[in-house]
Image (cartoon, rainbow, N blue to C red):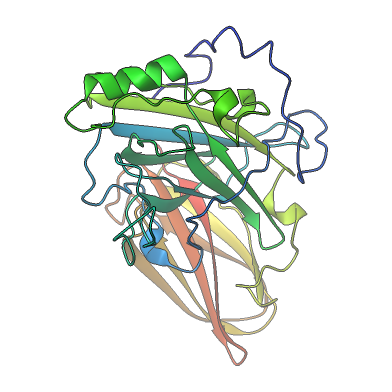
Length: 328
């Protein structure tokens, strides 16, 4: 995958005025991503685990795009792990899933090209998708949301270098039958006021025959805990900590604090939302607790995993999850 600095921005970017930040407040060390509209075709992904997936293509054809987004906290310019990143965009023909109307016919009930991931220890979330097409009035773009907590989420859009983008359309005329995108940034109602913070890299990937893209995004804060001491899914019943060490080799420890005597289990998922293991701990007392997890003994390879703590007591069932990284 392409990294930071792997692509030189067009010469006119530095000369353009920077977009005014709308609704994100002022950062200390980093420039906050501009806030943008969700667009006419948003879907709330947060309560639907079917959208927890890295590969969002379903049956859609198009040039493969590996998209990596790195989330940075404005307070200290360090990566933010365990925040949820949602993406959604149109297909190669400019259509969005989930809606049917005159300018977007026949797509109601469909779910393609939408999904979410959680950021890893490096603040990165990766998606496998197709390179989007374009439609009248908008330059080629991808919508994204960084869900930091129940009290704060950042919504914006990204776009691509014009020459590289239109080269993809030209190289795949059988797929992108509408041809080159006719708009430039100044003609787009979203990016006309500046786009340098939203311009993702775009490079060919010889291994996949597709393309890689990267964008670093700065949002408020330096961690989830700075925004909500009690998240709705925990109901005030527990506090889940980050596993340690992280990254880890073989075994790691998951710390948490129970406010009430509860039945506890840990579920492990891969980054596509498939459950890999359940560690039933039975009933545990209130107070500080730790659970050791050995993914090597469970036969799991080195990778990023989601661990979910489930707590059941007389008040109900409560869950929360974080990401951990197994290495050799």
